Length: 56
Image (cartoon, rainbow, N blue to C red; front, top):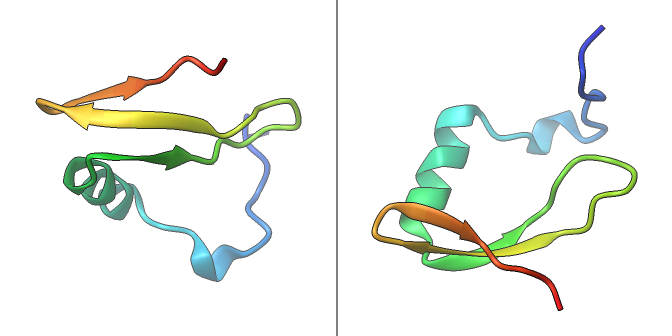
């Protein structure tokens, strides 16, 4: 059994390479995380490091 549920909208799912390319190109954004109790996280990308911002 996989630790993740299958995505409902499979046609919209990105490959790992596409996901990494987006994260490397963007300077800031919001990550939607999988899970029943997980909230979206804001992040910044500086100097090649992905920094998850603490929610207030």
